[in-house]
Length: 339
Ligand SMILES: NC(=O)c1ccc[n+]([C@@H]2O[C@H](COP(=O)([O-])OP(=O)(O)OC[C@H]3O[C@@H](n4cnc5c(N)ncnc54)[C@H](OP(=O)(O)O)[C@@H]3O)[C@@H](O)[C@H]2O)c1
Image (tube, rainbow, N blue to C red; front, top):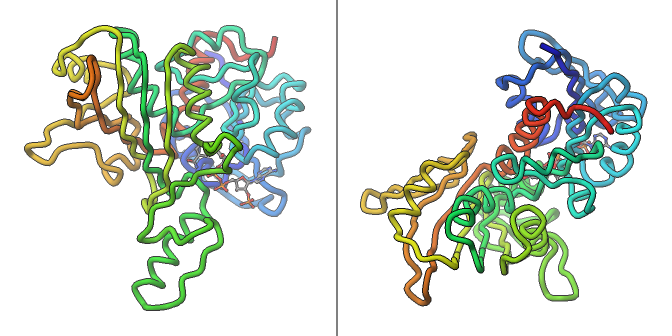
């Protein structure tokens, strides 16, 4: 079987670290692993499987001989390095926002729209973390009952803003407990013991960029006919995003049918036994691969509608795991080539 050289760019970051962990246990036929990061980290040693790897600087020439590059170093690095990598024959799977809404580049969640990989031109975009978990949960419902409208409210973990935000939550919590001054650097307000209805920049239409990402990416990945509105919120949780989903369908359903359907669908785990306090929790989802759904109940305010709670690890299914699954799908379909 052919083996592939895989590069992780931003290999020492939050998502890059999860990526190395997932690749270590994955069944991808990896011949060699190339770890790239900023120049200052050149030469840092990382153990992976049974060997020690040296981090190299992410620059165009470093992509020669790489089959698949997983970019996880921010939008600027993706925009600069991805076209150069593709010119060298490397297929890029990009975690940033750089290429998500470019029509010719597929935006892929393997459980939802893997077929869109077939016509890729060298760059495949990984969707926003909040979109990924929502669409894994919605896809089976849409296939069977046709979704008309979705109202989503998110409760997003600070690790979605990188390691600096994780550090800020810890420092503020410590300062609060010790009666010390609370300093804010990453967010415009204190995040410890607070909730911020603000993720990414605000746009002229009153929505945040994060909210618009969920709306536009749903249209590209699942169905442009679905009406969707979003409110995205940062909460003082380290890892795993939670979402409240209100879903209206064209066809009628029984709640038990929805539970059975979701429990049997790829990538989903049903945790729905409220009488015994069983429902998805951020702490329990962290470090796991699934999208957890629960609190599934009828919305009595209108016809054919339901509410549910959806939780997933934003660094794994929301980022690193989804990119590795895309790489697996490319290998399975023999699509590791630049047309
Ligand atoms: N965290 C999430 O939930 C999530 C979800 C989906 C997508 N993403 C995306 O994934 C990417 C990484 O996120 P993260 O949370 O892992 O951020 P992070 O913890 O800040 O890690 C980014 C890593 O990339 C390095 N880097 C920065 N510029 C680089 C360059 N030009 N070339 C090579 N390496 C460079 C950084 O080094 P320095 O620290 O020295 O700058 C750091 O090691 C971002 O595009 C983010 O939008 C994140």
